[in-house]
Image 1 (cartoon, rainbow over the protein chains, first blue to last red):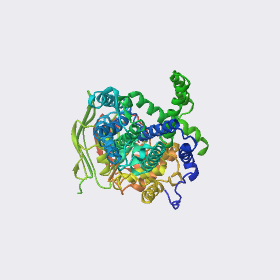
Image 2: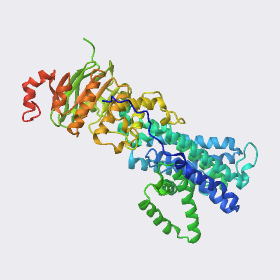
Image 3: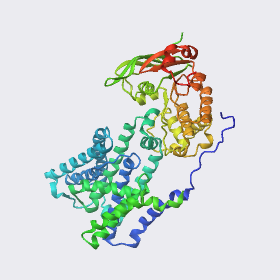
Image 4: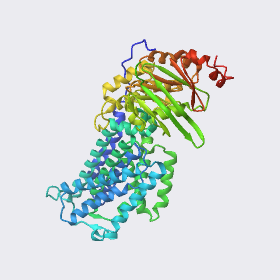
Length: 322
Length: 251
């Protein structure tokens, strides 16, 4: 068949600037926010938006790259937040202990619930993740020693090796921004790795991947655990932001919001969920200031994006790029 | 007498009252191209499914390279070198042709639990993949997304994926299905070139192709093997002639 020598050309990738201009722009804008608006309110709002972006980013690993619609992702946010706050009440206030514990707690919950829910597909997967999410919510409300329904207050932010570094809002802002960037780069590497390739392949065609010798379950479970761990890290930051945790952090409505952030931003891209997470948080806040019936405006906006911007905001922004 | 690479013995499978596999036993010897033919609904694709593990057996055993694999899951069989192509092409549509084949190569090249190194810049995987693409005549299409390939090219792509899967046997489920005359001719040439390098099980409707390629032919009718032997013997078999009565292809 192929008597002609093999052309040694590998398929060319698009030029570097086209692949990175959007992330560079987003992170640059986030970096200059505190320089332009120093007010506590703005700083706190954007910090919250970035924490939501970390959570949305983690969901994207399983939703966008694994095609697994988890409707219980907020549970991981709550678990991370509660881990920090509960340790705080026991006088363990240092982030060097509290944050790893939060991450491990999220990973462990993901391992157990993932091992069960990943045995199902489609609507059943949605239902079972929703059920696990609700179980986490009800567990939190029944923790009467830790505030029950009312939640739990921290008197100050986590210490960093004994120092009250995070008490400064600007410092905290940059810690969250740094975490967001680290998570972005980490997931960027992971989705391009051998592991990420198998995860993406199983989304493309599960039957083919099995026939090639891959068991998609193991890869999906690993992705689920990783997503749970990162979302719990977002939870640990969230607890520190308001120095308060409550069961309301893990309602299924919030899980739905995470899905909306990923889908509106652009699932299966990594900058998409960041834009979606920040955008949704800011737009919600802005609309809520205009009217208390803001959901009447927000709902149709979501519908419009879903209809006219398939692939999310990122698709719109990068339309000319390829 | 050497030992068979693949040995099926007493396979049974029923869906309710319908026996789709009814006591099938057959051996595939090293280097042999064993074709399975039969009218529509004879249970050929089901048989391939049973060999690969997609279809659970009611009874019978399958041994592969001397190992009983009857209870192994699909991916474990695949890792042992039981490599298949599908009747309806199964590629990774959003991946490039190159990445499709590189992914297949990756399955047989150590662990895939690597999280940080870019898979697409692993040059030895890409080299192996390019080589296989060249063997099936797809090298110029390496950078194209698989979804954009023609039907025949997707078939060729599947063969390339099989070639890098360290195959100990190739199970080809109607590789010429839906192909035009020219594409079929191209595929026959590809298979001719592979013949002898790997034992193969070929399920195919195109009789001209089967009789050109096969060392041995088994004829499956209603889940039963009614004849098995060399192309000449099968062609002359009266039971086979009866099963194919009216099919002009069978001459």
